[in-house]
Image (tube, rainbow, N blue to C red; front, side, top):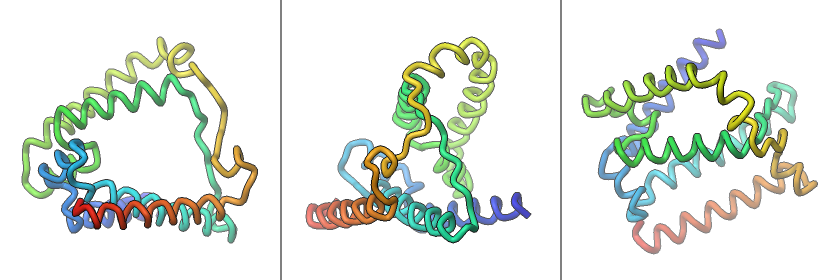
Length: 174
């Protein structure tokens, strides 16, 4: 049942990516050049909806939060690799699959690169396990925990910030 739910939500997310037109190369390039905020608006909307949904499910006891630890070395290295890959290809890992589904076979290079990167990571993991992956290990951090406030207060601030950004983007025609 869990796998089927994951498959369903993955297909739904792909459909939403396609409907929002964030799979298009011009939208990807526009985001990287800060000239088209369609992707940023889509991502912020998804983060906001997920924040509300996950915390609501956790608060009523239907889900349990599983926070990953913060390790600066791993996350900075991973973020840099993600950014370089996105800039070189013009698709992020999720949009690569969606673009391939739309018939753009250039996205196949990103998918193959992702598989190659995963295999390379698996080979390098033992050497990195006690070095770069643990540098700056700060444990399991959450913004509400660090601030000592309710998660709903942080979500409300996030919502206000998102709506202010959306309004700014619309005014600027982004």
